[in-house]
Image 1 (tube, one colour):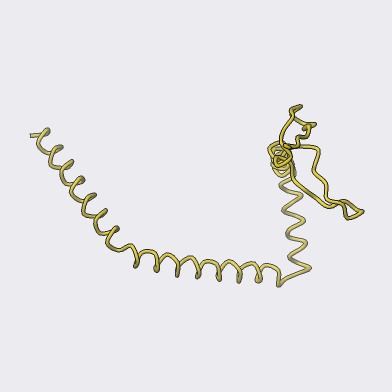
Image 2 (image 1 turned 135 degrees about the horizontal axis):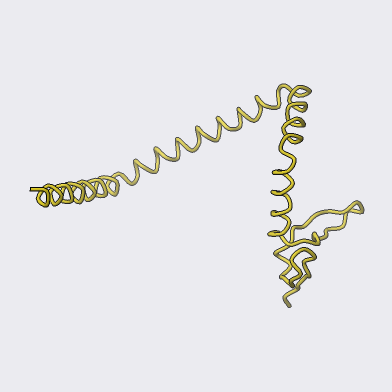
Length: 121
């Protein structure tokens, strides 16, 4: 049985999966009254209209919690290193594919340049 819910923002009936879940004050799992698309649009509009307020809040938070930014930077650096390792591993495992792509590209590139030179002369 597919459950549906009415979105109060766009006035449409949508499946329950199109609504974000949250836990209310009594600990009960519920769904928002606006669908994910409308909720996202509302959030983006608020962020755009209140950019200065949001920036001031962030600066105030970082003043109170100076290690917060360093924590996020550490997390970023760790993830970056992981992505680099995965990238090197992927490229080493797929080296033959990369070489064949490079050779094909090189042939096509020089064939095109040769054609251009022939049309000029």
